[in-house]
Length: 284
Ligand SMILES: COc1cc(-c2ccc3ncc(-c4cccc([C@@H](O)NCCN(C)C)c4)n3n2)ccc1O
Image (cartoon, rainbow, N blue to C red):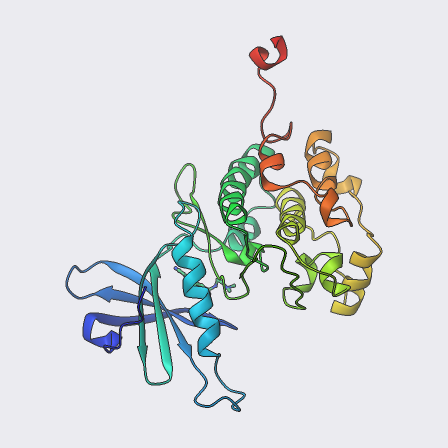
């Protein structure tokens, strides 16, 4: 997708700020020609190579290339890209149901069947991404949004591919990015990363979905990282007493130190907890 060099304000009415973070600022925008609502991610790019402010233009180009390859119902869709002076704007589908993080916070915790319904969609989106050798590298409840939180079965959308990476054949890739409580041991040890890095994060997200607790989080990031390296997590009786053994088995098969031993997204989708055996399956 070529970057349009028109001014985004010539085609869109720029609306309220929806959120901001390392990725820039996300604003609601209205396409003037159709009245359709979109989200615009406004990214300040570096004016010169030496400057510390802003994002490298090449990083935004990489993110756009990845998003173009990721057309899936569980991944936010990219519509348009603009570049004007030192600003780039990604126009993406507007997701109005808020973050999964807030959905969990609004309830003590979600039921196993609600968690399974969310995880199936997350695993289908992540499995699709991994089938193209793309890893997200920042999966967390804040980056999993709901299209309509009041719907009976909210549709999830994965957002924020600012740290995502597409692996070339045989390439070794290392990075220290991510959010402490969701990162696996290999990130902390600065070992080569892979799509299995995302699977560890899904194990942490599942633990939080079912309990409202974070398995490794401690008082400081340093202590959290020590807990991860020590593989120090448990299922406290006071919150997990009603949780099925199958759900705990699912989590234990993702929070595995060796990335090669961790379940893949495909293996998760056929795990007993996610895809229970039907009578017909048992008869076979
Ligand atoms: C294209 O890249 C991004 C898109 C978005 C995005 C896309 C569609 C969309 N519809 C609504 C929102 C939205 C609404 C409220 C807050 C936020 C965001 O600031 N918080 C969620 C992500 N955050 C924790 C990184 C985003 N978004 N955010 C967020 C981060 C990105 O790096």
